Length: 108
Image 1 (cartoon, rainbow, N blue to C red):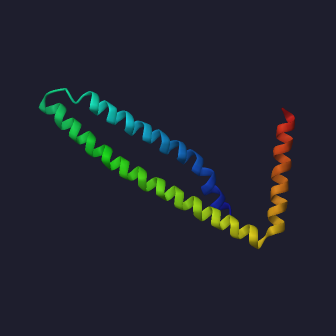
Image 2: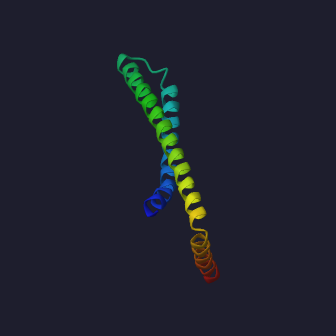
Image 3: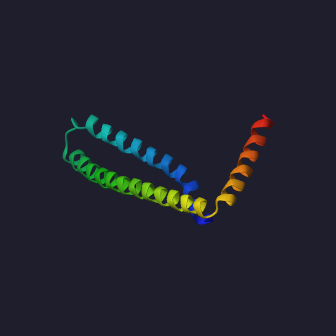
């Protein structure tokens, strides 16, 4: 159970990383469009390499996003099964978490 919980805790930084990577890809594409008027064999070759690299990164980003979605669904299934198998434990854990959150909010 703890390893499954750790995967869901890690997903938040992964989501932030995925969003940051999307922004980097978009910025690089914009830079390529802006430098399209630059002449020269070196500039053309560099743009071609960058476009190829961006395409690879986009494909890897889609694959990573699919993996995160798949893991999230698996974690939800495991959690659902755990709650159905141990309803009283789930209620107790929820009550404890609620009490802790309540105490933290009351401290403000």
